[in-house]
Image (cartoon, rainbow, N blue to C red; front, side, top):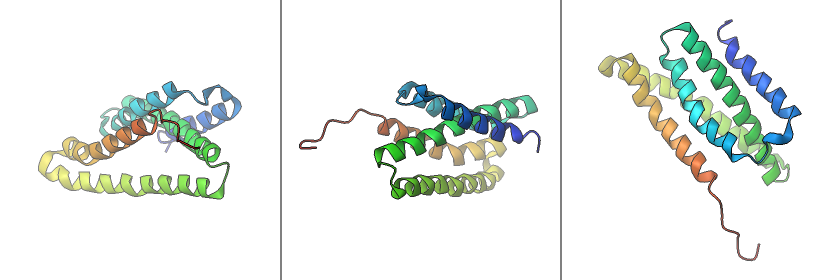
Length: 149
C-alpha cells in the first residue's frame, strides 16, 4: 500500500502544482512529454522486477496522469465554454480507460501462458499505447481555420 501511494501522491502533487501555476497552459511541449513518458512509466510499473524501478514508474505515471487529467479537463472546458457536456465527455473517456486497462491485463494474463509473462502483457498493452499516442499526436496537429467561422 505504501508503494502504491507513490502514484497517488505524485498525481495529487501535480494537481496542486498545475492549479497554482498557469504557465503550463498552451504548452504543447509538455503534452508531447506526457505522450512519451506515460507509456514508458506504465511499462516500468507493469514489467519492473525491482521495487525501485516500480516506484520510479509510479512516480512518473502519477505525475503524467495528474498533468494529463488536469490538462484534458481544462481544455475540454475551455473549448466547450465550460458546458456540462464537456465535463461529461471528459469523464466518459476516463471511464474507457478504466475498462480498457483491466481488459488488457486479462488478455495479457491469458497470453502469458503462450508467450511468457512479460511478452503476453506487452502484446496486450502495446496496441492501446500506440492508438493512444497516435490519437493524441493527431489531436495536437495544427488545424486550418474554418471558412466562415
